[in-house]
View 1 (cartoon, rainbow, N blue to C red):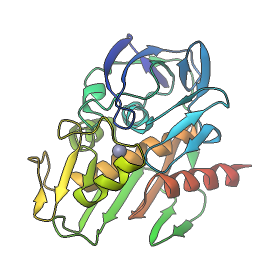
View 2 (tube, protein in one colour):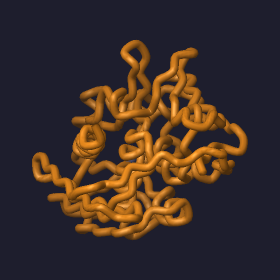
View 3 (cartoon, rainbow, N blue to C red):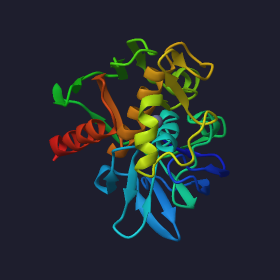
Length: 266
Ligand SMILES: [Zn+2]
């Protein structure tokens, strides 16, 4: 059975990169319509073909309109196993909220639809790597993620997490994990005109002696990486069955992985 929302809801706030205010309304949608973003009446399907930028978040575009920082809202919907929804965006960036997907996850109530879920089963092992990051995936009946992070900075430990992703596990173990930045990144990001809306209210900042915020989980950062990966995998446009092992991966490699899976299906 496919799933949509029982009822629509809205949420608003500041975009982490633009610092501008935006509002999103998430509405139920017809079976087989997938996840679609809508801006000024223009439809942008949330599929990997519409990814424009992956460097500091995922920007989706149909060529004329673009929407920044889509990954956390997409993760919330995929984590709840929502197949069909419309995300109406008033503004240029998805609001950062508290830096996690929990504020959205809490508002999602699902409704079943009488159509078969679209699924993609990995049929063979896949491996890709770039610049010290790697993703390895094997066939599995479950949707399972193992993630390792290991930064060359003091203030953060090597973190490892392995979870079978179900809506319950997503809500309890992943949704609340906030995005993070290292203090030494901040000047460079600001010089590039990014993180204009970033603050300790919507991100964990990690200094040489550790996080400046109090953490929600001891290993909050690796959980957030799983949150991001789930949002990126949603751009497959189908439920993935497979076990993914990611080491130090980010949006760019995650999206390349999704492209590879799509290519392997044709
Ligand atoms: Zn993120």
